[in-house]
Every structure is written in C-alpha cells, then in structure tokens.
Length: 209
Image 1 (cartoon, one colour):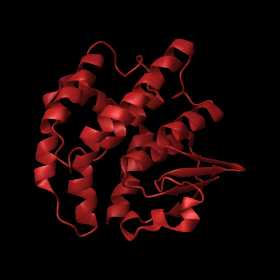
Image 2 (image 1 turned 45 degrees about the vertical axis):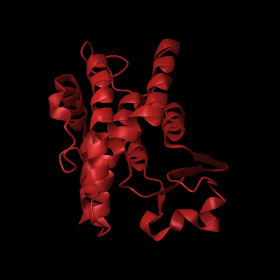
Image 3 (image 1 turned 90 degrees about the vertical axis):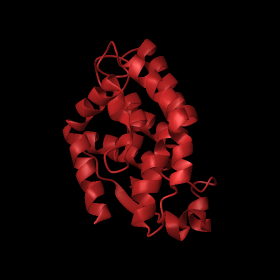
Image 4 (image 1 turned 45 degrees about the horizontal axis):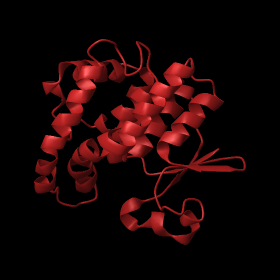
C-alpha cells in the first residue's frame, strides 16, 4: 500500500487518523504542495484533479479523501465503520456535508494560521474574517447534532467524526472558536483522548518542527 500525501491538509489528516487506528503504515510519498508537485505529470497520472491524498493499494488507485476513509474502514473491518445500513446512510450524509459545506468554512483557519506560516507566507486575516458568519452557522448545526449523543451518528466514533473533525486538528493553534459551542467542544475533546488521535497529532507536530 502506498499513500501520496501532504500531512498538514485536513484531507490528509483524515487518512492519517484512520491509518493510526488501523495500525497500518503504508509507504508514504510526500507531495509538497507549495512546490507544485501535485501538478506534475507523474502525479496527475494518479489523480487528474491534482489533489492529495491518493491511496494506491495493489492495482487500485483511489482519490477523494472521504472515499479513501470509507474504503479503509470497510476493507479492514474497522470499529469506525458503520454497523448497519441506517448508520451507513448517516455516515454518507455527514461525509457529504463535510465535503460540500463544512470544509469550506472550517479548513481555512489552519491553512492561514498553520500551513501558510510554515511555508513562510503571511496569514490572510481578511479572508479569515469573512468566514466567521459561515463558520458560526455550520458550527451550530454540529453543536445541535451533538447535543443528544457523544458522536455524530451514535454514541460510537465513526469515520464521519474523523472526516468532520479533521479540519479542527489545529484548533488551538489556528484559533478556531469552537469553545463557544459546548457540545462541539466536548465532542472534540473525546476524540482528542483517543490514542490514534494523539499519535497523529504528535506526528504532525514533528512535521512542523
């Protein structure tokens, strides 16, 4: 198994989290985004969209992070997989919500306050300020969903939680205002206590050194 990735993006973080839970260590190929390596012909032959991550498992090449999450959970019979058809539908709903709504309003914080400074670039605070209203709207949706159960689809962690939480890995460093939303904040703390989350965060911190 080979993973083409750049570990600081939220889409890459999702895959790092589930690999840590599965205790799988694929061969890693670093695609340095700020050097434009994702646009080189060799990488585009794997993913014509020019985005990471890409998972190569035997003869299969899979892109789109949520699809990779789903594949790994199912292929390795992970406890993070849905346990029945109804849960699977709920998982797919939240994976789609993350990709279509949540990522756009939450991933910018870490991009501008963690990744760009790591690359030696200036944070665009004006662009971040423009996200405040949209972030509030979708954070309230999450907070409501988490008001009656510990995790997104049940009282058990699923890949839906990993997908949605991936943009919040650096919430402290990126000053993402999640503490305003008590249910969301407590949910994230429960995830942060998982060994696979702790291991992933440690690896990310080491990458930033």
